[in-house]
Length: 474
Image 1 (tube, rainbow, N blue to C red):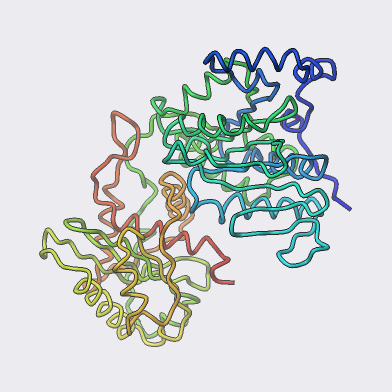
Image 2: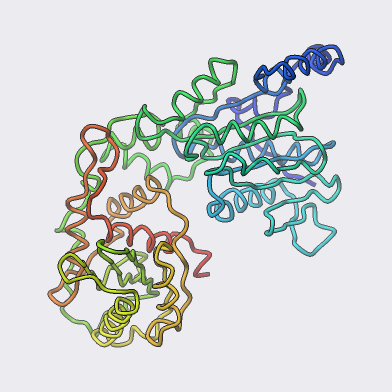
């Protein structure tokens, strides 16, 4: 028994039939198919719309419901008739924590049961490869990454021989439109007049981004564009009061970024990336170190470990019982100032620093620890997680990276006074503060300026992702 789902009017194209019964007969007629084959064999490129498929572009800011509505549509159609769904993102490392998890959550919301071992459940869950199989029909929702290689999607196969829907989430994150086109080329073998291509995207930083013109051309060619804002969901009671309050706070305190983040406008960002950082609010000076352990619930060790001439930043992030994050201590090694070092020596320096922090703050060693470090320096990660000093807790390589998402998370934490810094003469936290205070947008492009010092900022991105991902702790 499935639950009744509120499907908002603006999203109805996601579930409406592509064509009238009369038009469908034309697309499916042998004569029309013969004409298409002749054109294809003559070397002509044919848009999927001529096969009868419909393309839908979901363009908007955050908290608009475009992902959830598309997943509701997938849930409705995957249980009927024959046909599979391809659900894609740019990178493989993003799939498990995003669309694979969210699709399962949506199916449960719809009233379906899921299991990786119970054959009586509605859906069978497989994590390798990422698939959700509807047990009654055998239809599959398959999850793929499509970026970096135009041949990556060449071998994709629809097990049923038919595709109901091809969906690409965060389609703007793909490096180039050619990877979208490559996906379509493979999918065209399995579509018919009932199939849908759905591309959900958030605004890029500049109008020069490939996705602006690429998807505009699709709309001019007949693709349906769905644009909504968070207010549409709020008016229908689909956003929590806390979410609405946070959005309105950004609208008031940071209107330019609000237009970009929540309205989906392409704006020229300028000035400081973290203008909300305030030393009076975000910097503390601990005087009684014996009381710190009583305030701490968990500890996250986060690092951005560079190679060659770049600096390495490691933070001792304490998750306080209040829910705030206190950067209690820090390690910062700049080879341009102190000389280059190999991974073994650098790992030893980090372990010595870690032992020193535990010595300065009695009782912290009994807390629950987790660690994350940039996967670009795999050797250092391996040494730390096997070391005597830091090998007693689990480490997570920092592979889930999205510049805009991660930067905005730090902005929100600072704006809400959640992220605090303990600056002292015997730690390197002042180096972290210096980076935050000097991190700027490029005046010409409106993007975050390249070649700035950002090692502490990257470290904070990785550490706060663990803080945000409660699955790691509970």
